[in-house]
Image (cartoon, rainbow, N blue to C red; front, side, top):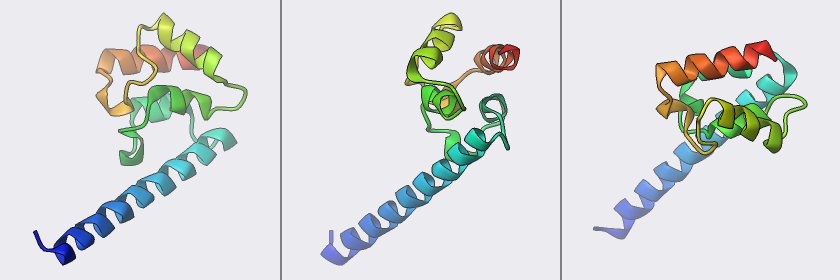
Length: 102
């Protein structure tokens, strides 16, 4: 493989990774501000949230820390590092329902 092709592919990969990080940071700010709820992100995740760990979505909420998030995830039997995009419909519904109860 040519060095130029490798450099271009690497540049494109870095550009994509930066765009995803920026989108996730915006989403995190929106959750913290209350513009969108974590339950909404879990039920209908935007593309930037598909690879995001579920625990990170929960911790983005005001007054939520890692311990509170882990307890909730344990109660619905979801691993904290599970990606939002890999949740089943039942898991999404259960988790969103528990979030709305709080």
